[in-house]
Length: 217
Image (cartoon, rainbow, N blue to C red; front, top):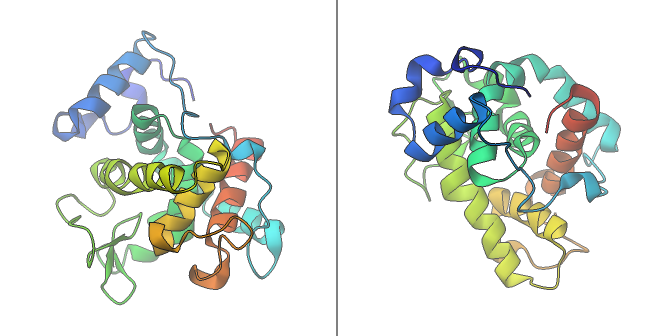
């Protein structure tokens, strides 16, 4: 995504309230002073996900295609956090697609899901994380979940499974986002115990679809 000015970033009206790291990232990218990198934690393009438990990769592709309008509405947010933490924006957006259909499922609940246990586009579990500081559909919520949950979980999985490739560690972190790092036990049965037993394979498939068919990073 080419960012040629701050006006291209739809969150410009909220920029003063954002994490300073994200603000610096946005300014650097928008002025051309820095080309963002997104693959420090691995690259989903090198993974081979099986997709959803029912319907496989085709079902994952269908679902993320259906969510594309909602994901594009927050595209600048996903890119800002992706650039700030060197993780693919497509992965963050794919998580949002899986968790809340890009927020569409939460418009009537004020951002609440999972029987009022989870909050926001990225469905923060309030039993384990303090995450109600920001509006459920805000860039700040997305940034908080990436910086405080997703990236730390990827790093913890990398420490737990040092023999895995970086790409595998990234997928392990995605699985951990759903059921915790302690449950990431083996690559062969990575999703065993995740929601529908397909969580990371579904999310990775959705991310790959965004990259291959919708020009995401």
